[in-house]
Image 1 (cartoon, rainbow, N blue to C red):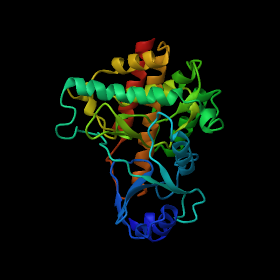
Image 2 (cartoon, one colour):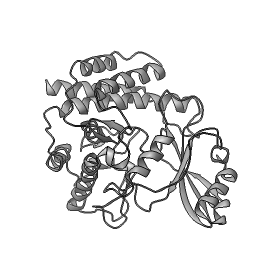
Image 3 (cartoon, rainbow, N blue to C red):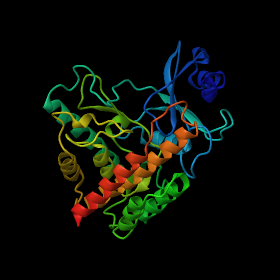
Length: 341
């Protein structure tokens, strides 16, 4: 594991950047949960920081761009969107053989499969947690890209059509067999792309476990993480992804993403969508399209995870046979479109 991070090389750079020689002595721990880029905690006498780098082996075109992650987090510092401070980044890949960056370790809870003991025990706490998550997303979508130096961070015009082509291409690059249902979902989405209401900074993978929650106050988001897929585009894509990840009671438990929101007391997806609409003035008429697109996108992501794990590029992490999961997500996406029609 140390060879993926090379603390003997990163440590001296951190020591120079932070003016503290204690950073030269570092232990390395893989942080569980990352299924795309690899995330490590570097800990030593001076404290702990977090390093992000791409997986080993071949990567898909345009994926795992560490420079973009570091750039957007630097740009959002000082806005209402909480992000960890970037301490060091190497976009050349000279130090580790791949680009990487190091950020501060923010204290907080990452809520995945279960809530921490005695955390958000009441329904009111769980509603407040959901509301805080939605409010941070609304805050992100209110940031003017030009005002934080991100005016050239993406191409909003034609964003959703381009996203469909991109994820279709990712599927073609990582699939191990044909899946007619995914072909159908992609084709139906391509025929129904709505006009964007506005263009904003888009996170690309916004969900509960990509945020750090305050250890004492579940109504406070301490940091938004995992900016790998961020760009400029249609903010409804972020809302669609959030609702895809937000499981409700009685729904199947996903293999790759947590489903703590199936527990009693959490509000349903309609609550989140309506709060977002109130906070941003967004028209939700075409919401089903964006929810269905989220299914299409994550089915492709799941296939990519399976391919990288099979190739041994996930630092020893394995996720089982994901074929049924990819198929289930795809069929759910078609059902979302059927309800809309």
